[in-house]
Length: 269
Image (cartoon, rainbow, N blue to C red; front, side, top):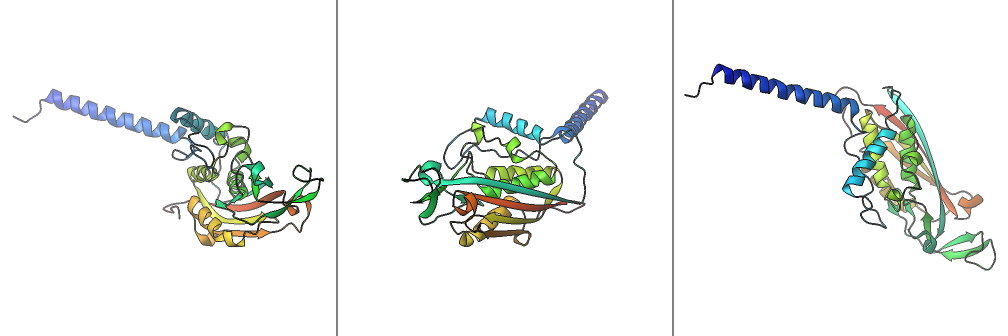
């Protein structure tokens, strides 16, 4: 006899209701207190180091950074947001930097350059020219385009700057591939219901020349921020041999970004 006893039916019904109620409450809590986007990816491996974070540390880091990017005020769902980002890093001989010049996720291979040794560290006299391969002196990989982009996205959303989120005194980000910061910026943007409108990059450096590397930089940005080529522009210019940039002692970048509110059935590109 496969017919259930009335008491069993009542028990099953009660159990089902309790399960549904638990699922509802769990979903509601997750919606209200979810971290920025789904499981942001942090720097567990970089170009120069391995296994920076244990699983436990990674979870704690995730919560720490997510809390920074969830302000007490509302991020109002306005249709269009505009952000600006800027970054600058020193360029020094490769042996001092310990890492190459990385811009837009691309290692910039180059011939030896005429670097101005302002302090006389490598030459007889301060201000002499030192012929050398260049590297970027930075806590992470020093990618000025990626750092500026992350700052622009955070700025458009009225969130803290990249230096507050990924501090340059924190050993967790030492030598980190800045693509990790870009992935997190995308997750945060998506969490708040936005997508890339367009990106305009102005890279400023005297040397090495980067024209041949720009298509790969653009490809990397399109992939990391889930957008299209028609929404990303990269310009590069020299500094007319003026100041530290003109003397090959630094490089810098400006980025302007617009974010569009995702509405209705609109999905990520």
